[in-house]
Length: 251
Image (cartoon, rainbow, N blue to C red; front, top):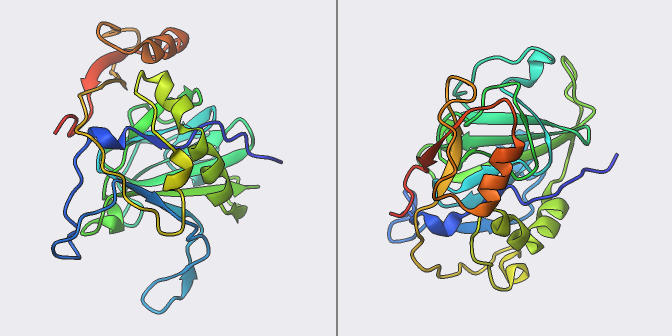
């Protein structure tokens, strides 16, 4: 099977402030940076492998669905979604059971995802925001992003390296930004490398995004939203939204 990887999983990092690196005095965390760290040794003695890519990004950066699918809180539950929880290792997180039969996993989010477990989302839908929850606390904010095939309840499946898909999708990052009415990024391919240079982004503006509300079909509004967001709201039947400014937006 081939992943139907339509969008890079992050966008809007320039809307949020870079933070000082808590582990390196006088240094700043990357506002956007990733490399192929799949299968790198991890743990105090390198006793396990990193079956994912870490995408460094400003805290608050929007995490989106790379393809269409259904959100789950705990992959082991199979067809029974449960409530979002903050795990000790992955912190706030989400699984996306993709329509392409690939399971996507994003961890260390800022807070619980914006949709209830079991919600079907379209490619490009905002799931949550980058943070430092779980065992990422005390370090720089980033998204731990993993992909697995053959995964089902009780079966771990096989981890695949996300990096080739991330590189291809990042080269088309402006397609995603256009959905939300953001200006294009110049020369996105130049940002992707083993140790990419950090671009100097101009201060960002506040941007509005949809967030689930408790009662279906209540709180829906598209006033002041970009055309791309309005179109996604109109196409998302059966879910209520309210206008909500992302945490830290416009700082």
